[in-house]
Image (cartoon, rainbow, N blue to C red; front, side):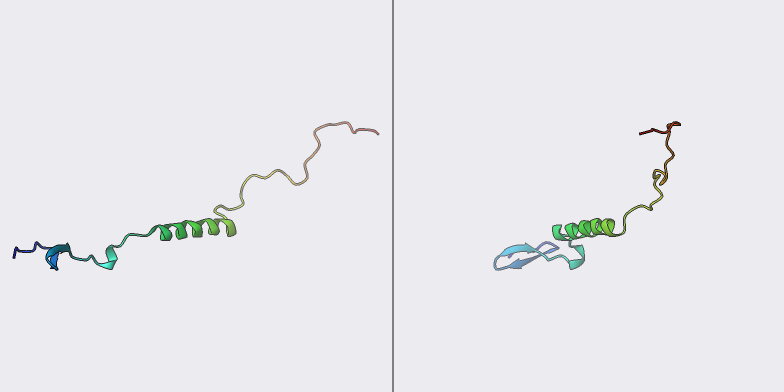
Length: 70
């Protein structure tokens, strides 16, 4: 029998790579979709910015000096 390299083991006559730890697992597509949905919902409920945007005055003054007689 041949020597098995480091990081591999022999299974039923062939060589396989050793399993990796669970900590090395990447985020799945569903996890990323869930995080994006959570950010979107946060924005819908609480908003991302404060309401300091410039808004028009609530009681605008008319620009015409003369009143219209009807």
